[in-house]
Length: 247
Length: 253
Image (cartoon, rainbow over all chains, first blue to last red; front, top):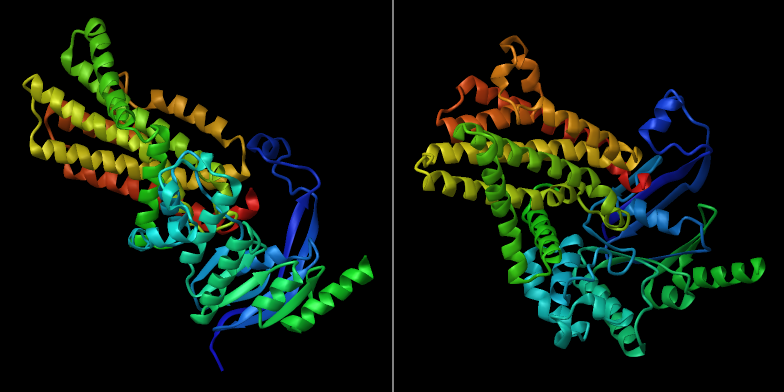
């Protein structure tokens, strides 16, 4: 059996919504530093999962069910309130496309910026610069400022950098559907290459087609709890059935 | 991310791209960046030549003002560093300290240019500082940079929770300007109070820098050890606060 790369054990997470907002030192002083009343908004409740090397796990669920929070916990962006998350591999999160890019810089500088933020070294970026620009079909526009790019061109560049930055585990949040049909096909082909190279993936999507096509198994969240777990196909069917029930 | 080649590479990219954006990536923009502190130095020296007859006082004032300007500008940028880049650590796992250090790079470049300008000026007027004096002054500038980093590590993450901290910090720096012996010599203060003035971190840096550059002496070993200790304390407090509050930074914005 392949080794476990990510283990989530009984993780719970809540956000606290203060009844009375207090954002400044002045407000804290005026209130005498007294604890303020706040409501608990539970987002995840005792969630457990395991991700083994080479696996592709899909996470499905309606809006607000805790999918993105789960990914942020796994990526180390949030801390769990309860439970533990053990990661035994480097994670590349793609929770949004083009996080950190600067419209005042050209494509090459943005590749360095986004690549660096995603954990690539300067040498790795320099080595893969041509491959990134070719994948994004932006070599003729390498020295054009990003503010002059169309949204599709910018998304292609972001994808190209992100796919180059993949370490051992790739975490994707609803970002497998940009660009025209041709670019989408190349993204899917690249994703399959990443899988074939033995990378482990965790994919969040509302789209049953994506979960079925790209994941081995999946789980479904509802109100912060895992309500279904199984093969990607079964969970996608269950998700569709739940939409019919609630719809 | 500990101090690795990747984190240094990221810090360098952030500084380089910020610099490029600020000066539109042109050669003339780069020249302007260098010219600004040089022009400021000349303007201050010209104005002070009219106002003050003592040449040593003029130089001491200019050295104090440039060091203070770096402290004030650096801590102001550092305080806002995480808030202005919150879109990064809400979506990526970026080491927060890199964002803070990158934010103070620009004022540090200004200080570096000033260092070159003042050494050239002193050489031109026949008071060329020795290599040891230049080396010590560079070390004091680095010590001030570490103090700015220490303050900024703490204030940047506290600012996410207390959104009027920038106003409070403005008042602190205004009072701090007069607490540090910039426009007055520390000698006019009774010696028994000097210790309290030295607690304010910019004070020893300004005093020691003037001693090596203008007076041509080196501060005592004990004085340098005290400064080192002060730098270590400020950095340790900053690191502690960032380590404590940093893991929940994405939830604070």
